Image (cartoon, rainbow, N blue to C red):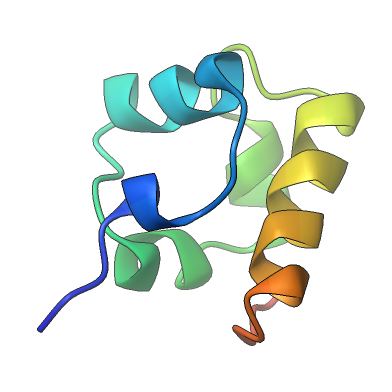
Length: 64
């Protein structure tokens, strides 16, 4: 079973930015590098930190 982004505690802006870029699952999200994540439109340093913190708080390992 793939976990959906909605299971993370993300702001609406961060969630929508990821969804618009085609990221729908946590597996897709954690496969990204920091550079790939920052290339997503509307993901700057603040949203980058928010996404990384949400994954950390959920105990999910990631590359960034």
